[in-house]
Image 1: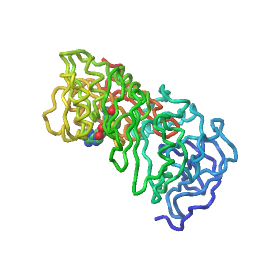
Image 2: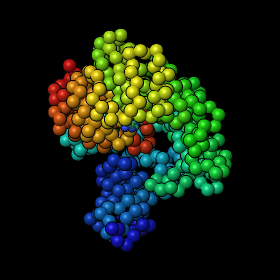
Image 3: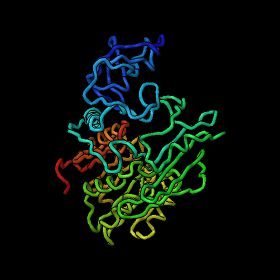
Image 4: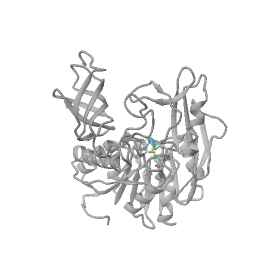
Amino acid sequence: MTGTSLVGTDVELTVGPVAHGGHCVGRSEGRVVFVRHALPGEQVRAVVTEGGTASRYLRADAVAVVSAAPDRVPQRCPVAGPGGCGGCDWQHVSVEGQRALKAEVVAEQLRRLAGVERAVQVEAVPGDAAGLGWRTRLRLAVDREGRAGLRRHRSHQVVHLADCPLSHPAVEVGSLLARRWPGAGSLAVAVSVATGDRVVLVDGVAQGRSRLAEHAAGRSWRVTGDGFWQVHPGAADALVDAVRAQLRPRPGEQLVDLYAGVGLFAGALADDLGPAGGVDAVEAAAGAVRDARRNLHDRPGVRLHEARVDRWLRGGTVPRADVVVLDPPRIGAGAEVVRRIVGLGPRAVAYVACDPAALARDVGTFRGLGWELTALRALDTFPLTHHVECVALLQRGTGGEIS
Ligand SMILES: C[S@@+](CC[C@H](N)C(=O)[O-])C[C@H]1O[C@@H](n2cnc3c(N)ncnc32)[C@H](O)[C@@H]1O
């Protein structure tokens, strides 16, 4: 029920705290307004973009700033901002300011969904230029005229642009945007900063080169098509370092790597386990498992399982697990997977999360089973967007450091 639409009408707001999803919370006539392109403490005039007289809340875009917050900066892209491209949420905020906002969001999600009180700091990751030039993987939409662009926020409408300042220069996004792509629906481009390899897919079909050689954790990794690999050039190394520091895998231990992709954590941590240790790596996408098989052929202690994680865990044939890496997609692992991991009795779980709400829900499930969040890193692997990557250490109710 929305009642009479309020879309297009103006509201004057004092902007309140940041909320998950790239907006802040304000109030207008007693109703919550999720307002984009604003900052906490600002006084803004915003235009309603969704909702009506009977809606519980409205969405709005700040179009005029009456009093600006100290962290406000001029946006660095002509199509960012109200009514523009949905790719960036925090173009109007200093790099440090947007990290502080993300830290607040992670802390708030943990408090609200997991009952955990924790101060959070979002750390910079090497490999971007003050928040720009980091995106090595990009999806473009193509409109009916064959022109490529990026989607408007919460819309199918294609926004046209000449360049994207978040893209890594090796993506050469300008050349993709300048061309016409008649009959195409979408483009995907991926580049390896280490090797210069570049893959362009039109509606999922590679144009020329179909795979990349990436480099991370001192090894080379094959990634086919638009198979999963971290987008920020510094992310894979930073995440491996964070997971290793939290788990401290020991020689002889068994690691279970869930949602293993092309084998990043399995391959990087296998050496820590030595010849007496082993890894079970579980991944559902057949293409990723093929890449992982190729990537890890020199690691005989790694066993690859092409399976859905929930089914594999339910299958009952899971071997010993001393330590677990859990790196699910955005929706998180879910209660059943968490319960089964706890049932394996590992000494520690490192949870790599690209969505703080999903992380917090799963941490809540761990806590309900007597486990605790004992360490947390938050890494700014998606600058100027609302996304943030967390690495959380979970241990059975010790409340202390890893034993
Ligand atoms: C966030 S990525 C992590 C990949 C890898 N750990 C890395 O860091 O490169 C999540 C992976 O989970 C896989 N996946 C998604 N749902 C799955 C499921 N139910 N069971 C197993 N794998 C799944 C995806 O194909 C993807 O490779």
